[in-house]
Length: 221
Image (cartoon, rainbow, N blue to C red):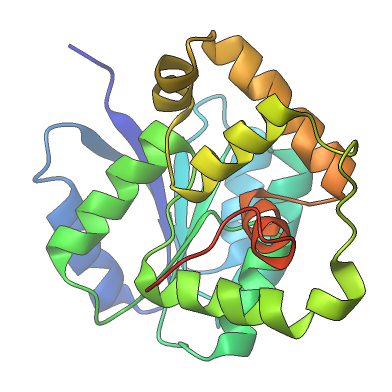
């Protein structure tokens, strides 16, 4: 049996936090290893504990250290930890900002329990997950910056890198991409890292923006 996905939940609303923990711990493959009421408590735990989470689910607006600043620290000091934003704020600017600082998924607090569980599992498997609402915002960001960031050269990306990038945009996991292209998962990760370097993207969201801007991938939703 696979080890459970280790989760930390960070939210200053105690009742909401306890409700989410109750929901998550009903799932056999999920384990909440810590809860915090602000980003400062979270970072203090991460700095001291030998038991690191796979995923941090974090609110944006909290006292002392908010979710944006905490995510920046996690992205820099603990790059293997995946951060999911779970917040009441659904404006384009908030989503764009959180994607920029390193979250791998963005959920609104009125999301369904089923969608929350699904997102956690997708992030655990693929490393990221963007729902239709977030994909739409990514497209808007790409279109807004198309004139300034479009820089595709025919020799800039290899044919294989373009194949990998298209599959990343379809939210395929490393294993799925490897299977489809008949290459090893390690080779896929090598291509992903090259794509991040060549396109100067900070994360997967940046790769999707680049792909849309350069007409490597398009979305209809």
